[in-house]
Length: 235
Image (cartoon, rainbow, N blue to C red; front, side, top):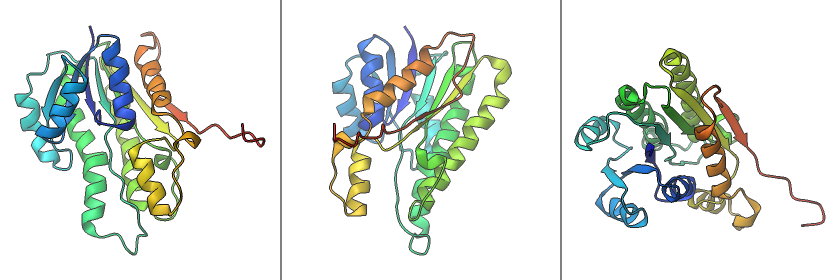
């Protein structure tokens, strides 16, 4: 049985990943923002353990981890949670920048730091679910992209620094995926949301599990999951 710590298991890609790992019998340790969300994920994943921790307050993570009773050896730390703040640079205030950077970058950095001693073994793996916005940006995406560009740098640095420990590090860059976050993006853009046009969260979960299950003689460092172009005949 493998032990995985997962953020963002309450919806979207994180939920799809947790579903797959739970079905195959892996042990899940799920970070939840508060008691209510912890209760929801515990109900969905019988036998899973929950850790109440607010990623918007990275300084509190050390205490949450210390009280969580995590196993001495963890097989995977999966960073899936994220927040999206859209707006032009001329309009974004400090609170919006802070929310983006704290949840999307500082919290993953701190959680990785706290759990590295448990991950430094040949089966250890850290997966950062990033975004296509971590490779390129566009108007009104500055705060989100900046945090995701930083997440890319974090992953690359951890990979190099921990190369001699056996730890593997993977970054997954999904394109637009049919999640609640994507629905909010469409609302911001003033467009109708059609989930069937976008990547299914389970497809991204497949990419994550492929990296986790790769034989030990190799590592998937980066993988981009793009929306498949629709055929001109509409099928």
